[in-house]
Length: 317
Image 1 (cartoon, rainbow, N blue to C red):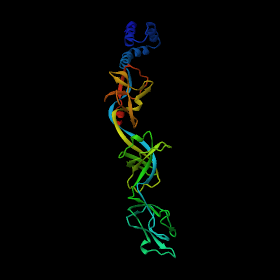
Image 2: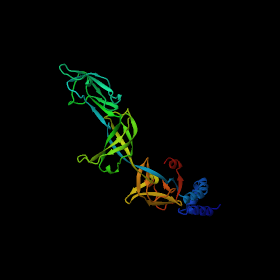
Image 3: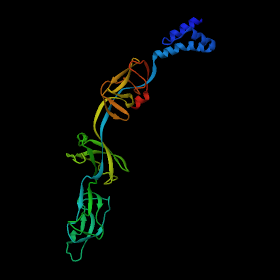
Image 4: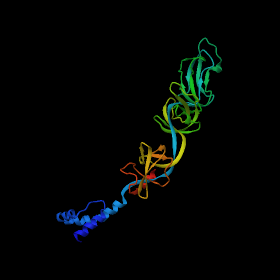
């Protein structure tokens, strides 16, 4: 092949480059092997330039996202019965239950003894559980004087049912409704499930927070007074799902870069809820659209690229 033929071949393969006869001659004199390699590699380089750089993309797919509200509070009894004697002038002679014990309605909790000089009927010398449930707290001891007007002797949790009394910011109060499911993280126990039972109609003017009660059932592992956090599911929204890394936030709002016919298109998109590293796209994308996995990676509108679908990301998301 003559020098002119080699020069023409290099120019045809690299239309955007300056290739001169003098440069080609210098390359041939300095390294004949380099000249042969350059001529051989020119068509392959030209094909790669024409196809564009490889870009990792994911397919947009339809998914549903859960809207949630996070709250925190303290575990309390759903309903608590205070147990007092119905006579005066007696002392505690025997306590028959301990905190956490399950009791039946009418079960004897304690026995009382008449104080010397007092006259009390024998049938009033026992204290019975008013309801079936769990002994939440014992507030007396053997030998103590008890009275109808004094503090309760026992607190019995009716049915053993407990719930989370949660504080809710006023800005999120409107989203909470009776019956919504919740996941509760109980300190030292882990995650349990519950459901919103009541929602307060009032907002505290000092804290600007309302309250809701989330039922936890009769789980004996959950102790009264325990601090807990809850995530309440307040709604569901469905749309296109893409990785959050594929969204670029600019002066005009969020955009994604879509590869169509091997060309980059930039599309403004309204975004919705987030979940597990994915974001909901409410408009602007169709199922199956190829979205650049990492937006803003040296790509501009109209750039020619070669999309490489990240199937593992598509399947995981």
